[in-house]
Length: 272
Image 1 (cartoon, rainbow, N blue to C red):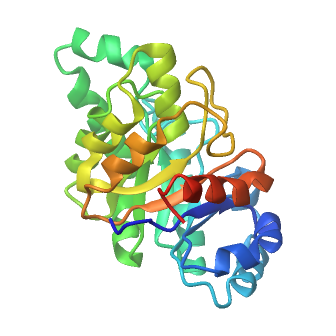
Image 2 (cartoon, one colour):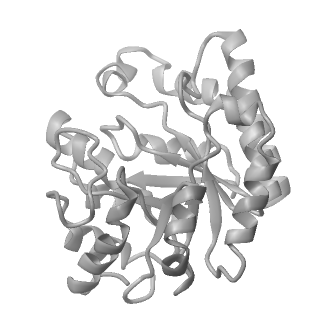
């Protein structure tokens, strides 16, 4: 990664209107977060895409979306539920294609329970991966066809390597790794997982995307960068050793903290 990497943001289309000037002042990567609800994906989302395209006139960064995730996991064993999940992933990729998006966030299936129990079964880890393949195989092929990357984001993941193994198992350039710094910090503080920079090291150059949010190690805070206890120097030092160029997406609960997040990382000499 280059020195002083450029920070992007996860925004709704409404927030993109507010922070359009900031998002266009440098080649900032953007993740739109309007397209994960089932109600949106089952409805007429094309006007939303057209509105986003209008706002992105002159934008130089990469664009993607947060994919659907609410109410399911990609390792579901229920064959009927699996068909719904497959449908949702393909619906998300249809949006990506219309938008010209190059990434879609998918939530990791690994839980804290898994960390203690996958090895309690002779084929526990292999079974987990196989279930994900049954759910994602069509989406992976579709992502390959449209030049989009499915980036698997840690949620409860205590072991930063398990998700990396899952991504590699597809043998596809369309399946990469995402890290959420707040989720990793929660796992570190509350479940005994490694610190956030270890997640970066585990992903290595398979890291294509990172949600940057500050937190306290207890909950999923999505605070302005600099307001929590994430060790940003360690995180950016680990990122600086990569030769890949992951999308650096500031993902906040309150989007009004975006300018301060960028300013705080700039003041630390870490990003712009």
